[in-house]
Length: 325
Image (cartoon, rainbow, N blue to C red; front, side, top):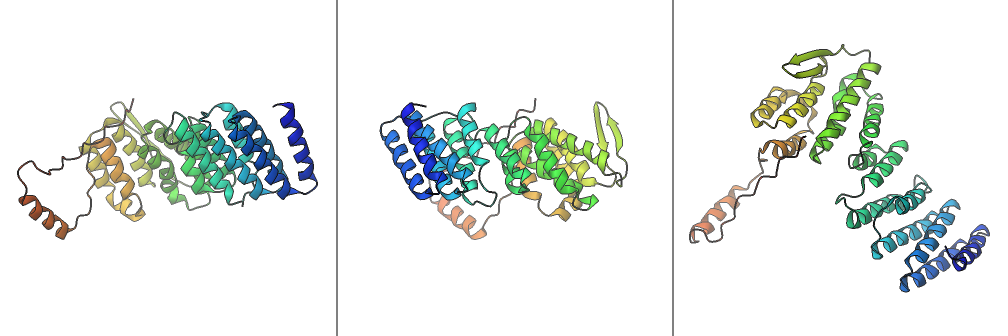
């Protein structure tokens, strides 16, 4: 940071301390815009980061969030790739927001969008996802936490499983599989078999340690397969067998598994869409899509007027089976 920028920030910091928040905010924007126009990206970043930090600490979340979003735009316009330094800046600002500040979520989404555009991960940087997910989990916002943790780094499964298990302990004992599935099924749908398996192992271990009211699990062996079966929790057993089936990739096994547990799955009422997608991803089983008989009839009538081979639509190529090694 140059001495000129330091002097500017010191002067504006004094205004913030004096309660002249609007004036400080506007001048910070003007100075940062000047640096952006000159393509002095480092100068713009220094001004915006320090200014946003000062305003957020002063409780001026509206003005602070405006500078935070400006900062992300500078990263994007300058085509600055995510690294530990600039990710650290953004996350430190995110932690200064009040829990009920609406713009906080938008700032988090903009961070992810920037990292997806300029980083190596199309869904956004895993470290950012994980840090944001942990923050939401600590603030008891499970839905937002889940959405980010499932796209997090290698340590995210532990945080996600902890979230789901703590959520489960507030519910009835028999609902254990529902909370386990909130980690297992999303991981499978993003092609992450490793972390889906890890989540279930951690979850079942905690279940045996804490929920002593449940019937003791039984060890079942078949060939080289060993599973811990919970007699009173059939859907938890279904999740265990699902992970085994996914790694083997046999469509008939998957169909038999869903058929065997169909009544239990029907009781849940919310797993079918996820299981259909998993069937298509890992077993090549096409999803049955609703059709309109009238449209089908019209399509066949129009097709009959075409010459053979003209206007035909080739069948979709099945998605590749995920690498399960």
